[in-house]
Length: 203
Image (cartoon, rainbow, N blue to C red; front, side, top):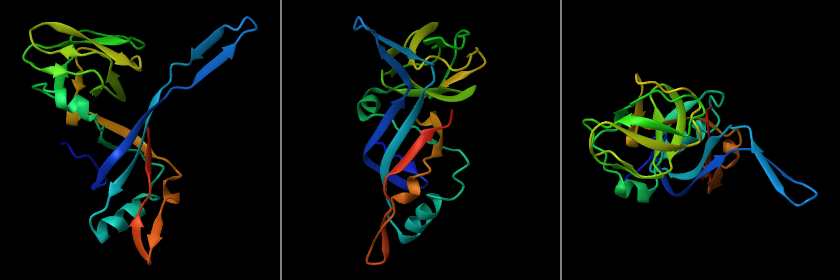
């Protein structure tokens, strides 16, 4: 079982991954629903950590309020069902053709790569920081280009000089929620729980 870390502390289950995509929702007088989105989306993560030593407790306490204006990176956690099926032979797959900003899919050059990229896999591109999720299984066996369907739509153009980052190479850039430091609890004068860690994707 894969273990994920936040600032050196183990992330413990359950953790939540939320897609925040603001929508405008309106019902007309004829009771028809109209919805619109500005096309902006970010991932938000929430989890607890297991602090194994007193030093780790102090370090994570300080990290909860220090330099909150700066972004950082960590491996994007993957769902267990995805990890059970993920067997790509490389975590770095070349892009096969240019895809413009706003596209809902890209093409990978799978020559020299084998395996399956399951739907639900979080990925990113070497050319920009946005994290995407794969919405259908991708067969990486064979040669030539293969289509990969994504959510959300591409934030930036992706060219053939870029690669798709998979698995442990998919790093999310994040800001810590400014309310993180409110979740510190003490017991008998000893720091026992740093509370829920809330991260928002830096987009």
